[in-house]
Amino acid sequence: MAELSTVARPYAEALFGAALDAKSGLQGWAELVDEMAQVASNPDVREAMADPRLDDAQRAQTFTSLLKGDVPQAARNFIELLAQNDRLLLLPEIASQFVTLKNRHEGSAQADITSAFELSEAQVKELTSALELKFGLKLKPRVTVDAALIGGVRVAVGDQVLDTSVQAQLARMRDTLAA
Image (cartoon, rainbow, N blue to C red):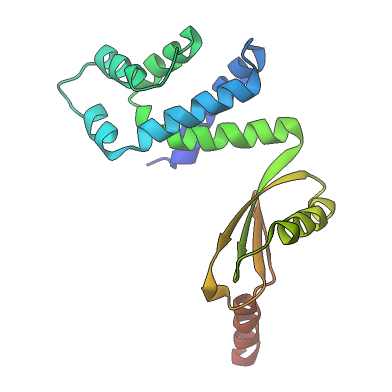
């Protein structure tokens, strides 16, 4: 079976292309795609979309009715396409790839920073500035705390990982001693 990311990629790219041409702009589409992903992630919605008694048009109509506000015709068409191809439940992965394409277009990236301890706003800003120099991108930090790291931080930007945690250093030492 194909990876979800592989199946979702063409949809994300097509949606991104449509968003670039739209009057509402890239940010408006990013917010709408995020909302669609949240709705598709809801367990009750997932169950309803898998109901074999609903046809494609009913799935699309039901899904669209769960979105807040006025849904543009282009978004309705996209939802109908996903329903016809039985891909509505891929929306969280499509949204993730859409954000990646949007960030790349804007010359930025998401930085997932995991720290052993809570970081102050000033520490996050200082760390982000240093990481922006290293990666050459404008970074949008998302900080989480994981006490298992013992100390230090682990940063993931796209597929690149910078791990300066004590946990990683201990693992490297263990591997060196075992060799």
